[in-house]
Length: 144
Image: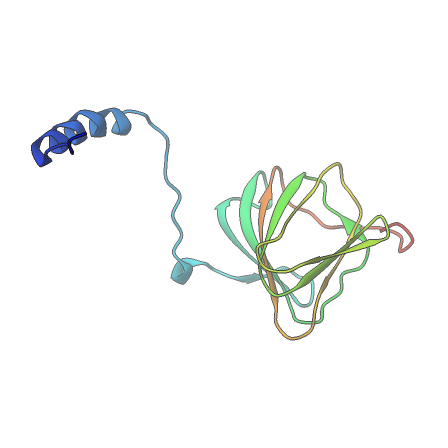
């Protein structure tokens, strides 16, 4: 089988590229240097929204827990999907502890109660896909 010539590849690119441009969509790009961290009002917790508005609807954001932080039992109203970016996070759900090093994923839906703990040594950073306005709802300590 022969390899395509450079002119035929260029022709293919000119035919395909306009159809890709017409496909629509959008791009959301936030280089690390433009990520803006803000205090959340919870000691040891910072957030950086990169798409959407955390306070009013669906959003994508980073959440950072200080090294050694343990949250009280709580839940969030929106379904959310989380990837650990750095640090070692332990999630406690239904009495079971799940160690989540960088690259780990978890989803909490239906206002699932949980506790999160960032192991000592390094801050824990998570990337969160929240499907509605973000909140933190404290719960009695007996329900993780």
